[in-house]
Length: 255
Image 1: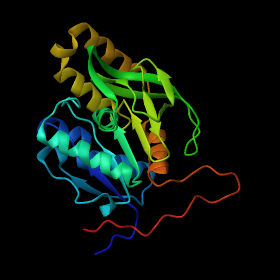
Image 2 (image 1 turned 180 degrees about the vertical axis):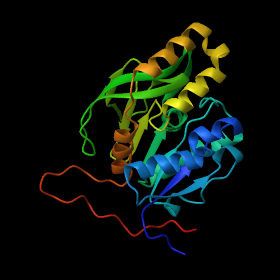
Image 3 (image 1 turned 60 degrees about the vertical axis):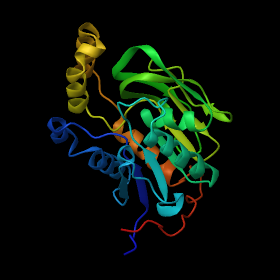
Image 4 (image 1 turned 60 degrees about the horizontal axis):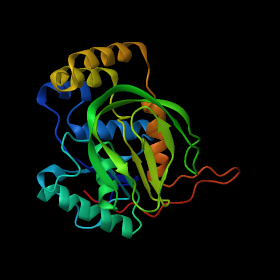
C-alpha cells in the first residue's frame, strides 16, 4: 500500500542499548521517527538496519534519506560500512536528498572523497555553533548535543562548510543542493545525552564527563528548530519570499 505522506528512509547505523531505549522512545528507528515528525507531523519513515547489512535496493525507494549516528568509525572498511558508502555514492549521483548525522556526516564525507580521522579526545554535551543561512533555513546560533571522537578532517570536493563552532573544524556542510551533513546530534535530548555520557565516562575522562553533565543542566538545545531545518532540506522546501515551496513528486516508498 502506498503511503500518503512523504517518506524518509532512515539508515540505522547502530542500536541503542536496551537500558537506554526508554529515554529515546525506543531504538534509533523510533528516535529518528519522532525527531523528524517534530519537524513535520506528516512525515512517515521507513527504517533499514544498515549496521546489520540491510540496505535499500535503490535510492528511489524513499523520498529522501537520513543516516544516523553510530559508535562505529566511518573510516573502517567493514562490509556493512563499505556497502553503505557505496549506497551513498549511488544515491548522491542519482540526485537523491541525503542528510548525515554524526557518523552519517562522517560516512558521507568519506563516501564522496573526504577524509575522516580520530581526534585526540571525545567531544560530548551541548556545543554552540553559528550556521549560515541557506535556501532551506534561516541559520543563526544554535546549540546541539555532541557525542563523537571521530571528525571530518578534509571535506569532499564540492562541499561547502556552513557552520563554525567548538565541536569540530567542519560542524556542518552541504554538497550541491541535495546533501546536508551535521557533526552533532540534534535528535539527542538532555536525558539520553546524560545517560550516554555516564555510560562512557571512563572513555571520555571523568573530569570532562562531569563538566559536560553540568553544561547539560545549564544549557538548552535547539533540537526542535533543527528538526524543522532538516525536514525542510530533505523535502526541498526552500525559503522563497512570496512563493510556495517547490512541489514534491508522489511518495515512492512502500510498506
